Amino acid sequence: MRAHRVKAIVLRYLFLFRRSYDRLTDAFYWPTIDLLVWGLMSAYFQARNPGDTNFMVIIVTGILFWLIVWRGQYEITVNILEDLWNKNLVNIFVSPLSFWEWVTSFIIIGVIKAALSVSFASLIAFLLYKISIFIYGFYLIPYIISLILTGWWIGFLVGGLILRFGTKIQTLAWAFVAVISPFSAIYYPVSVLPQWAQFVAWFIPTTYIFEGARAIVNNGQFDIFPLLLSLLLNIVYLGLSLAFLRTSFNQVLKKGLVKVY
Image (tube, rainbow, N blue to C red; front, side, top):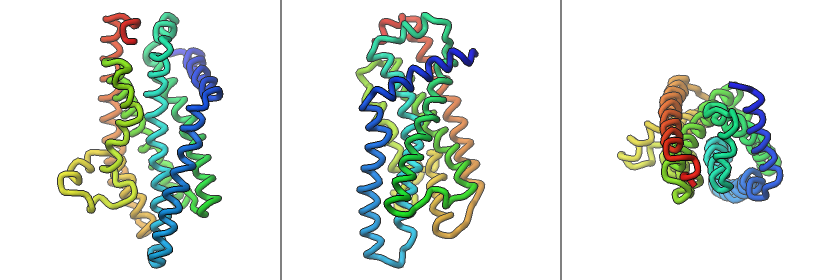
């Protein structure tokens, strides 16, 4: 793996980000709208029930945490789509760039943009509601790691599907991650879900993060076991999704890169 080739692909996507209003909107506009709508709604409900002082904190930090997952998967899937839309996959791989250098560039650009979006949204949350994501203290670091890992394996899974079936299923780049959000219990405990949905929820790594975050806010308690289980699930899913992406890419190579468009 050559660092200069990874750097070149990262720079390509950064230049695209700087010049694309669509990308800027996704990174800054929509998180702001979510914070305004959901934050004001939670402020209203908390005013109706003054005894629940943690309700607004849970909602706002839930938005910020989910943004990490969203950005992690978005940068992988949409950048793959960008190369397909522009018929640029052949141009990229006619160079010495390897598959793993290509994947590594997605991971790096995803971390960079997630940091930009979450930092911006965290500032907005603090200015509007005086709520800081740093209330979780040291536990914030492993939580972020687990959430970004979730974003990666979802992105690689969807990326593999897009390579196999082409842009006709491109809506999965935006829609697939939303499928796991109801089971992740972002704004409510898992116990409110139907029994079958609770069973599904415990196989989703983000469920353990949001349940753990609520336990810290409500009780000041941190249980390391759910965090470790979340990380373990993420590692397993990440390995499987990378294998699937690699298999999909190999099939594309057999057919010819041009045919994937």
